[in-house]
Length: 148
Length: 148
Length: 93
Length: 93
Image: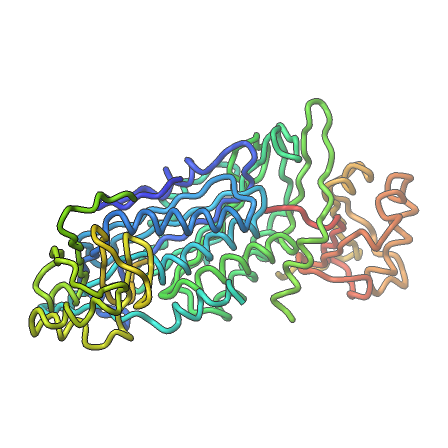
């Protein structure tokens, strides 16, 4: 299990190298970042809260489900917490497999379930205002496609 | 257009950072690597040949098609040529967007078309034997799903 | 996880994000009231604790529940020593 | 791309991967034979050049064609100055 919840930043290159192994031919990576002022988001910074203990066990459960569905050599899930600014990295999901479709599918599956099941909450700052982010219907829809 | 065909290795972390921009919230990356002896592949090394000039124009055409289909902020396609050994990186595709589904879909689309349309050929070494790799039916199937 | 039940039965109750701000507390210990068998039985006892609690738990449709760090719902059994958490739909990633 | 047609009409013909190994050449200049209007017209002239050429172009079902660095097929027109390439299905990525 390679699940980490941390305040520190992560190095995508180092994580990609760590996923490489003799039987691996395909590594799919997803990096989520804080969109800045120029986007419809208009966010200058955000603070991520989580439920220590439950977060890790949910992420491990999601990883285990992905491993049960696809022939994966390795999986990495890193999610940052605390205060992040526009442009900062939030989350990394990496899936390594012999074959690219398994790697892509697993990375998407993990992101879709992370978005709906892992207990993280974002409070966004727009200038002096801070507001909790509402959950998005589209994330529920994305999750449901894996169970139909 | 960010298409590179090169003998040198690439740094996934640097490419991910280069794709980050103010309006970007999602970066999907794919890294293809040379599988080694422990896989069903059993390859110790390979040499990649390509069609200079046509390769770049095909990759640029694929990138342009992906940009026409999804709202992408940036795209990177890097493909190595020459002799590579087990564990080496072969290809990187990165797609950056405001939204994760666009980034994931574009990265998969580009890989699927690269596999069938970009003029690269692999000659694999297994010990003292070298043989040209046959194209795979599954790659044609993967490409077709985007045109149905 | 294994939690030893104390002699006097009590629960840990946790709140996150805007629910934590409404209740004014991240975690509180609640003596297990009589006749509380599931999360749904517990809610009226919590909403009675303060106006902020009532506000936080006003619309249980918008609230997710975990018991001992696993997702549950209003029908999930609770017993002394359990950790019950209430939080809004998650927004990480 | 713009290629200036030389006074005597000729074509560049390129081969890749195992087709290059069979023909023994990566690129050759071929004088444009009479009555060659498309790639399919050109093929018999190439197969006549050597046993290796005949072997490389034996099964045109397994061969892909590009004219001036864009995919074509046996019906794609060719003219003096064109670059015609023959290669197996691609296997990069």
